[in-house]
View 1 (tube, rainbow, N blue to C red):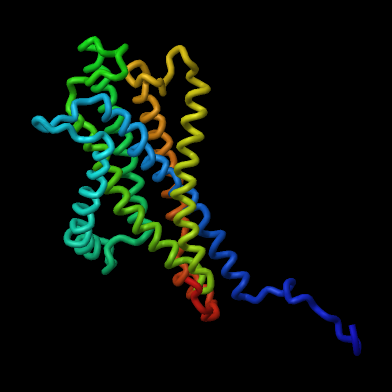
View 2 (view 1 turned 90 degrees about the vertical axis):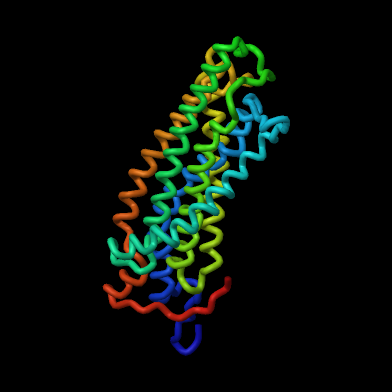
Length: 276
């Protein structure tokens, strides 16, 4: 200190822009948290759904398709959903919702969450049908036997998740890019990717919990799928996804987009350089 002037550490000073940027990030966290469940459902398509496929009839004539190749329906459903959205949904939503861009990022993400619920319901019904086919042919005790049920019964769950990804992926990315402060654009990608990684983590956590709770007597997730109750696990995910969607609706209804909120409050953030 010199000349009666007190030295102030710049780290303790916060401009209006700094405060508003932090508030913007905090406001986004509920939306961020409620999108994790979609990716938890997504994981099942590359794990248990592939395990289901290995036990089913995968023949097309004399050719047997690999179980993991069913993920091609992800790509097919995305390629089908995107043009339908652009050509049909955007014009229709533009007229109904008075939005020239069709659905808002939050609405688009919400549609994807609904598709994830449908996917788990379809997966549960398909698994029940698969188990009945195994039992009726006396194959319940043989984990390597081919059940005389076409693998294409699994297509609906892949289709729903793929279509849901077309909505959720773009909706999430658009939302985070749009709402993140100008000087923190790299954070938008981090928020999006973290929901994906946390979806894998939540899936592993649920599998661990279910295996411990259901035990070895009547396990939901048995090494031999024909003796397990995988359909119950799918129903659990459907219920959790539905509850998550309800919470998401409340969060989305409460959320006010950055531009609108700042305009109403008369706040104009500093034009910071973009680091992304």
